[in-house]
Length: 482
Image (cartoon, one colour):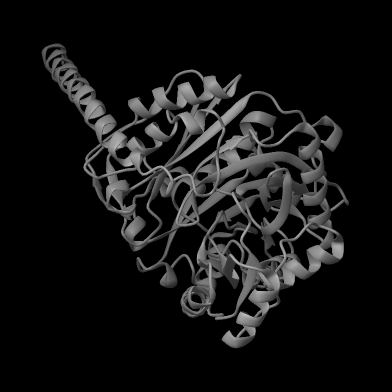
């Protein structure tokens, strides 16, 4: 049992977890680096403690500092959010060693799914469909031999990878030699493990994932799929639930495979099983042993609060819903609002946000790290917020998303808001014709996004002037009546 949760993260996900804690009457402890002094999550928590300098390696990734902060503040549980230490078996072990509850899966499940080669083997043994591929390979000549057996094109992936890091396609032997070296170097830098493996590159793939929940009483369920095919550099940009490619029959098959995958490693808490889908066939990709960035779209179409479920499972409760009770209603779309420049290959654009206005209205939710003007730090991921919309149909959800993006004003830095707006208005998107190559095969989106940005800037300029006039009138009125 616990009554105080330390949130070992920052930004919008820290705010999200703090809100869930408050919904359950739990106290929350925020941690922050020097760069995040005064950040929104530090103001919302019951207690906030500084844990180190701005670089993540000296603060949010410093396991000793995280554990010490929990002990010093009386927290009995840790919620890692996503990123940072969220998929680290070391965190699970440290919690166990220090009498803390990890709001996440057991160490063994993390370790099994954290190594992609080990995970592939376990999934094959459990009967979950897996893309043809290899074990971990360190000898380039052996890789060339294996590639001839599998057949080109080949995808080279980091064994300990994630988030698109250490992943390259190769269509012949020359490209494969380069891809192996590049992926191995990237994996060594990011994960401390240079091993790579090969998979057959699936033609016209869609990235579809299944949300699972499991408790300590033997109950494991799935909450349906999320479509995550709109990506740049193997990193998700826009997600939706459900998917236009998934029929009810396929949802049941994919859901059953995801539950089977979770049970095969003794999984507990919230997790996501990711699949590659092509022409009605699907294959296991990986399992994310944590809460996903895109979890809100599942919440909106199922009505299940995933973070509250995480907390309740960690408290020893049974899942609040059985598989036969899960229902899907309507359509939800999430746009990751990032401080980045689409016209500069989505390069990060950290800096000071001089103006900030969130959209609102029916069916609109914004999970943000900002409540007003502030700073987007260069030390961390450039995501500012997630804008999530809900509609009875996909068309209504897309229309609400376009409307909401037009209302979303972030001044002082470049963001990807204009790019989201034109994706949502693209004929291929609206028809549900999606693959993970959607962005590179639609270069015209950049030109259209520039035109959209100019229209929004013109409209928001007048809005800003009206707001300044109203503020001046209010100040004058206050002065005369004070």
